[in-house]
Length: 158
Ligand SMILES: [Zn+2]
Image (cartoon, rainbow, N blue to C red; front, side, top):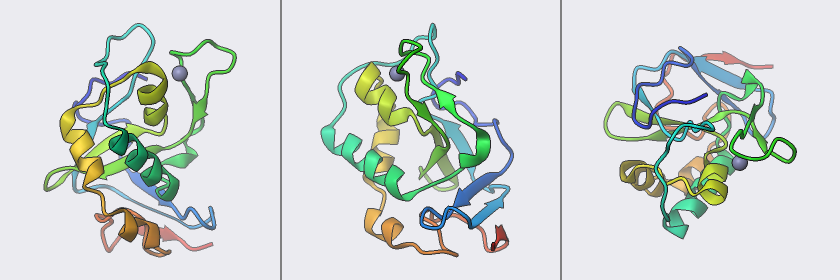
């Protein structure tokens, strides 16, 4: 799947978060915030390249260890890699941007950065660096590591 950086995300109407500890609990809702695509790369489509700060990559990896979202959509393989040995990822990442706007990136974004030299927009890197990782890592069901889940989100409890 290819989407231009900072274009509107319309892949899926709902955002869904799964509890990373149990892998069972889930919640979903139709976001009131806008979603902007980041890092949806595809072979043959040009993308922005360049070095990125190590602190940003480390922070993004740490975020991906605690946030588990839109994971039930099947696997997505990196098609910039040779077919055998291409890593697969499942799920996406949500990072709060400005007021009412969140970035929507595929799980493979860190692979695109470290293996294929992808350089995301500066605004995305700043948003990742601004994440309160301690608070996200401490979130326990029914809270999830993302600050904008509405109170009326639907929850699957078992
Ligand atoms: Zn790859």
